[in-house]
Amino acid sequence: MKHPDVNKIIDHLEHLDNSEDSPCGFDMNFEADARDNSKHPCGSACCIGGHAALLLGNEEMCPEDALSQFCDIPSNDAEQLCWPGRRHEVTYALTTLEDVLPVLRHYRDTGEIDWSAVVTRQRGLSD
Image (cartoon, rainbow, N blue to C red; front, top):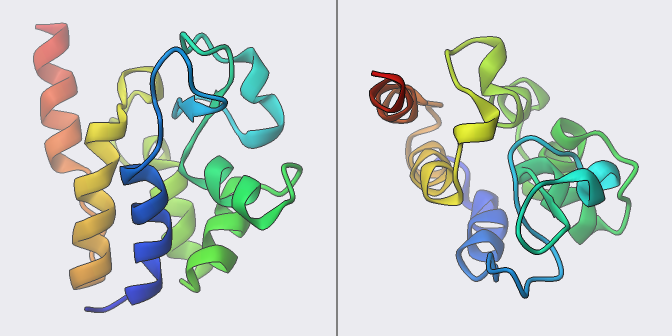
């Protein structure tokens, strides 16, 4: 395992109540401090780094800094995990919790950030 502390965010997200009854669901479009703007059925949801910020108790923290600190990973890696649309054709509004968990597990185990399966799935949605 290259980055064992990534298990902390994986464990949190695996056990996240992402239902309409959730106090804070998953929405890749929103940071922690903007989670109430999410269109998630629960009315409040945020991204990977947003959840890390909430777990750190600092919802104002930018997502990549929160993920880097929470999981003890390089900031460049955290940036690529939090903002995949900057380097890949990932559409945040189409990115699900089920999409991010395999990406995080692969990163934890190999140190590689691979959004290709997400990009492929999203391309299929637009065909």
